[in-house]
Image (cartoon, rainbow, N blue to C red):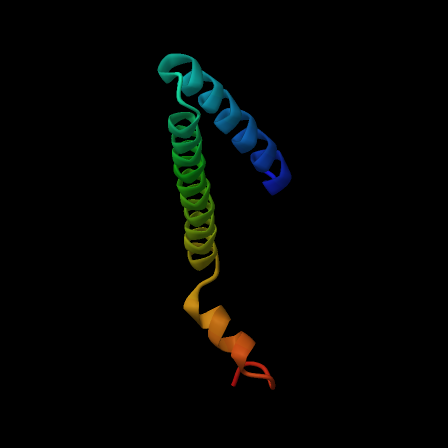
Amino acid sequence: MYFPQFLVGMFATSFIVAIWADIETGSVWTALGWAILALVILQFGYIGLVVSLIYKRASEGAEASPASEVANDLNPTGPV
């Protein structure tokens, strides 16, 4: 998921939550509080998704290359 797409969805969701909270409570301040809470929860979810994708990619990369090949990459003259 691209970050601009996430931002549009996040703001649309918080706007809908704010409208819903305003209709239910009649208070603009409560609606603002619920919208901010929705923004925070969505942001934590996005950060969790990015961290899990990075962790998954790192673990796949570690399994793909054996340690001996990595050691040869560090030796500029080639295998001894």
